[in-house]
Image (cartoon, rainbow, N blue to C red; front, side, top):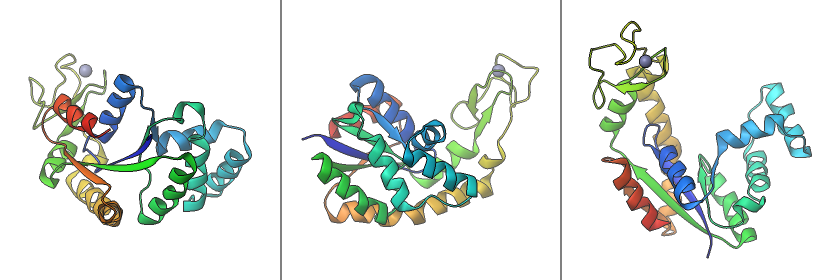
Length: 214
Ligand SMILES: [Zn+2]
């Protein structure tokens, strides 16, 4: 049976990277909410126009509208088989709505959590530095530049630290994520559809674990 894979992971857990690998290597499409919303801005369908109006008015996009966006996007031929949802559902309410879609499409829902301990997430996010010239990403803990604060290829440029990656902000982001996601994880756990993979360690090892569950 084809599946709808719901990939769940905190900011910095690397779920986007893993979803991309599944897409590249197994041809399993990665359907991310960010991409869907971006597509809606330029499309010309009744739903897209409705979304554009909501965005222009500065209102939040409701669960119902988000559901319809996911439904429309996943009715395309490329998602006729198994696909990965990245960034949806976010809440237990959205998860319930997704059940309908799975029924309609005759698919099984499999939730997979990419699990990374909080202190590791803190290091990944707060340690991030980037080169303003070439965009290369460093991490002061796991991938430091040869000279502190300088890009290996552009020593004249000082590495920059995004305001979003400052410790206090990262803490808030991670706490918000946890609060939102706990009910979602419980929802899938209760119905025996939650699997966990260890998101620490090497990219390739994590991918091997993920692929076994797909
Ligand atoms: Zn550089």
